[in-house]
Picture 1 (tube, rainbow, N blue to C red):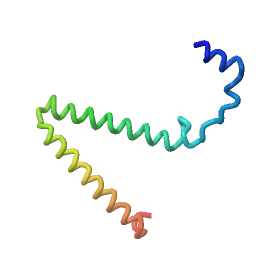
Picture 2 (cartoon, one colour; picture 1 turned 90 degrees about the vertical axis):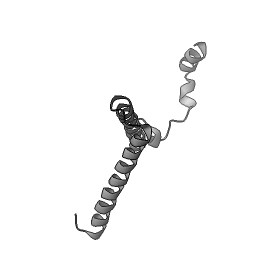
Picture 3 (cartoon, rainbow, N blue to C red; picture 1 turned 180 degrees about the vertical axis):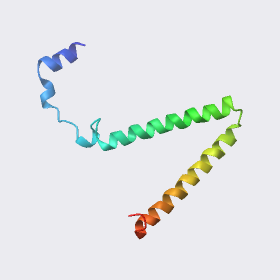
Length: 89
């Protein structure tokens, strides 16, 4: 505690370089990391719901998530292909 008070009172904080804007809390990088963390928490919640409340076996939950991942990849691949060909612009 005393070290922190001395750090502030002696203005030692002025000698520390500020962090890059890439690593600031409001940057695109950190916002994206936050969104990925929230997505992982949502997937964890869904997995718990599927296995505990609906009684689906763990392997069945994994299979559902694998199919959903493949389906999302298919849709994103088709959409990006159409954008590249200029059909959706």
